[in-house]
Image (cartoon, rainbow, N blue to C red; front, side, top):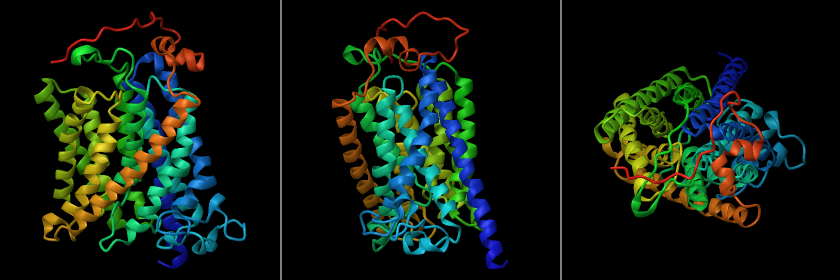
Amino acid sequence: MDVETKVVVDTLWVIIAACLVFFMNAGFAMLETGLCQAKNAVNILAKNFIVFAISSIAFWVVGFGLMFGDGNGFVGMSGLLLRGPDNSPAMGDAYSGVFSALGWTGVPLEAKFFFQLVFAGTAATIVSGAVAERIKFTSFIVFSFILVAVIYPIGGHWAWGGGWLATLSTPFADFAGSTVVHSVGGWAALMGAIILGPRIGKYGTGGAIRPIPGHNMSLATLGALILWLGWFGFNPGSTMAADVALISKVALNTNLAAAAGCLLATAVSWLILKRPDLSMILNGTLAGLVAITAPCNAVGLTSSFFIGAIAGVLVVFAVLFFDRTVKVDDPVGALSVHLVNGVWGTLSVGLFASEGGLFFGGGFAKTLSQLIGIVAICALTVAGSSLVWFLLKVTLGIRVGAEEELEGLDTGEHGMQAYPGFTAPMTPEPKAMEIS
């Protein structure tokens, strides 16, 4: 294949993969809406729709430059608005002098930008679910912009933009973003959920917990299936080239981990909760997908199975931990899926990598690099997102009023209902009940 034809084929593959990742926005919208109450459906749909528009502008104006622009080990210093040093558009061959970290892929800069944009949008979307049913719409918009414009790109620069994590003696490895995308979204979501506090009536005195079930498990299931499909763009697309052998390997590893996560979460929830909880089945599948995102290019099929299986176990215990032990109210399980298993997936590279992994005779060096990257990006995201959440709390405010929360954000924030043909009384202030 000549060079020109290869560029065409590679570019088509990258754009198709990016479109699959873009379609994951629909998956997140359906999943989160289904797992939350009907009175907040419009609000959740609006957040999941507008977040990609916010991400597009934030990443174009500043985020992409901070992440991939030439600079130093901590931040990119060029390429804002996709422009070069002379303020001309940094397109075509020109980007090699502005975005040197992208020189390994031969596709046009526009294609690379679009692919990285849909990843940035995913990080912001993760936050939506954990803060659902009580956050102000305006504050969510502002936080999403800052996350994609500043916090996410700096961590991404460290790992993917030629930053200091990529230059360790044993480089930090995160092929498709278990930490760079999923854990960043998860840490930002955790800080938001803590600072917002739980939904009214979720927790009572003496450790009492009130379940608040989702209103439409059909939507949630459809959303999880769309996300499963979209992951075949997320992970295989990160090859950034139509390398048929690597794409095939990554796709199969991705699917096997998802299947293992699904089955193990089903089994564990059945044992602990005495029933095969559908929400656990869905989140177990997503946990396997998140976990395999970092190591999908570096491990074999058996390792993929065990990585996904462990993720399926972890997600069940993480949901119970956040809900019952530390009482952080996460309506959709985003923290358990994206934060916990983003960390696990990144760590698993050091353990299971066929070349250099601890379980394959490679010693501890790769695992240590993975731990350094996990801790560093955690510290950055926790500090940055906490600061933004607190500033929003004392300025715009981040939580709707109690009356609006009880009535539903659809009416209070948007002046409409998702299901106007159905009538239901306003939810009274609930009484907490014990869960054994």
